[in-house]
Amino acid sequence: MASRDSGNSTSIVSGRTLISVAAFLVLAFLSFSFIGLVPSAHADAPTAVRVGEMASSEAPGVTKHSASEVRAYVKQHAISMDGDVTYASKPTLKKGSYYPGVLSDKTTRSALDALNCIRYIAGLGNNVVLDSQYSSLAQAATLVNAVNGELSHYPSQPAGMSNELFNQCYSGASSSNLAWGYGSLNNAVFGWMDDGDSVNIDRVGHRRWILNPQMGRVGFGVVEHLYALYAVDFSASGKQTNVVWPAQTMPIEYFGNRQPWTISVGEEVQNPSQVRVTLTRSDGRTWNFSALSTSTTAKNYFGINNDGYGASGCIIFRPDGVDYNTNDRFHVKATGVNGRTIEYDVDFISVYPEIEAALLDDSYLSNSFVYTGKQIKPKVQVFTEYLELQKGTDYTVTYSKNVNVGTGVITVKGVGQFSGTAKVKFKITRASIAKAKAKRIKAMKYRNGKAVKPAVQLTYKGKKLKKSKDYKVKYKNNRKRGTATAIITGIGNFKGTKQLKFKIR
Image (cartoon, rainbow, N blue to C red; front, side, top):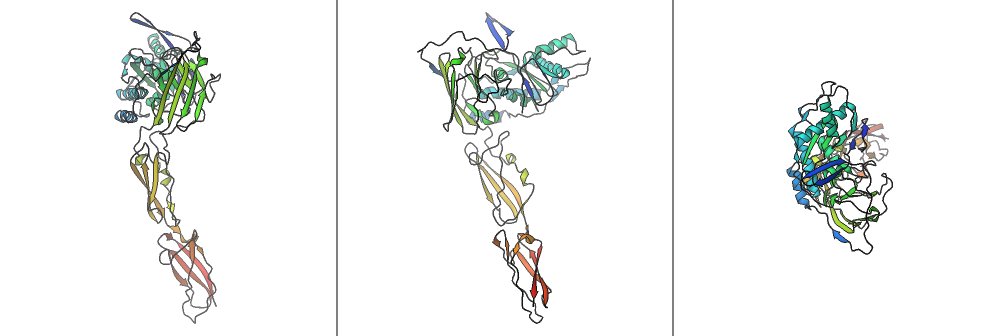
């Protein structure tokens, strides 16, 4: 579970923490752009939609990719949430010798691929490039926070750090998304898309910076388990409006039920109290959002933020009691958005549709199963890289060679959005004949020194066992009066021995 904080400073204790660079306001004047820091606050609503005004309907102003296109992109770029962090030159945290370090090309390019993948899925330009100056600033931001043991956009100057280096650290920290506690830089990039905690949900700043249509350049930094993404960039010409997340074709691996839905309108949302959102799932279940939430801990959260986190004017809503599955379709209808209606569908897909043996959790098969006389059907769990699939919806399971002692086979076949077949083997071992139930042998008549061999009747889990197939019998002390013994030895699906006493009179 990740905890997040968008305050000025967060002490590093445990867990994972994210803080977003403060909102920025862009004022264009001739050929110059001025980026100034503005406080995180709801903007006033200066005008209202006139009563009786006809609302026009709009779709998201982004490219909608098909499921096959999204899958192909993820596969082609080998997108992963994991990945080792390596350095071209390692950072130094020793007082008086502070050095930010430089990440390896492999690490930064992997993170860049993750960011561009997110933007591609959202229908934005996926041609953001690495900027060496931004990377230096992001790296410096993680250095100062690591030295101070906190996560802050406005860090204090550590003792023994030069003014020149500190100015670089401060500049990077004040313009970057920051995170702590993630297992990799790629994991932090996807983590910044969450913003579902009680501190960030009212602005969703991390996500909006990553989905800023005008982002053209980026930089990354990592020191220990502190991560930075230099986010304040408006060098691209993107002007897309109504940027939505989850995207219209949404990998279920990249979106969870704690995450809010967002529509970045691209302009101030006037009269937020007039905005209404209806979310309808393909099975008919509907969530309605009308009253703006007064608490960020509200389960059915609804809010509007007009601050300049990348693009201004963001509608934020999170349905309560929802689970997302492949093949789910949701219809979104937002009305009263500056006199307009925004309407679109979201289709949840999986980007890992091929069932592979490596994705079957067979850890429970390390222990063999004992013969029962009936079909043995071990439970199967199937995962994509980040998602547990659903039996019946995503795959079917059949069993073979699963009764008798030997090697049983589980066959998993993809259905719906999934294809391919995977097989897992498991062991069935012999049962103990001692656990079979035996019918009591009645007293036998003495036969003048001849061997007395009464029939033996055994059942195992309600099934009658067969001599020479399941067991064999030999006798002891069975030629004289007294107590004799039938010694039963398991064969076939059984092992061990069992003894039955009987009387000879």
